[in-house]
Amino acid sequence: MGVRWAEEVVVEVVTLLPLVSESGELLLPGWVRMFVEALRRRVPVKLILVDVISLKGFYMVLRYGGRLPIVIVNGRKVPSEIAENPEVLAEQAYKTMLEISK
Image (cartoon, rainbow, N blue to C red):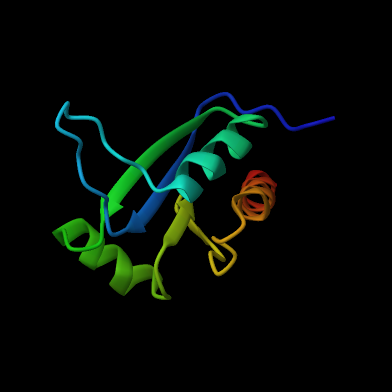
């Protein structure tokens, strides 16, 4: 039985943001889309993409450290060295949420 959250879980991803298409659609890297879809199977997710070259991105790199991408769930960094496997990253993010909710 899973844990129920009253609100959306806030997931921030600090990375180099991709280009925007001619129609104005944000072209997400495939791993970000797969990660969010895997996580949304368990909990409602609010995704915030932060460009590493922005002021907020610079601040977050200083605060959380590590290499890109930096994945933050409700203010807590998730080990993102496994970003090559979005399913494993989603599982790690879910475990982080469970730790936070205790």
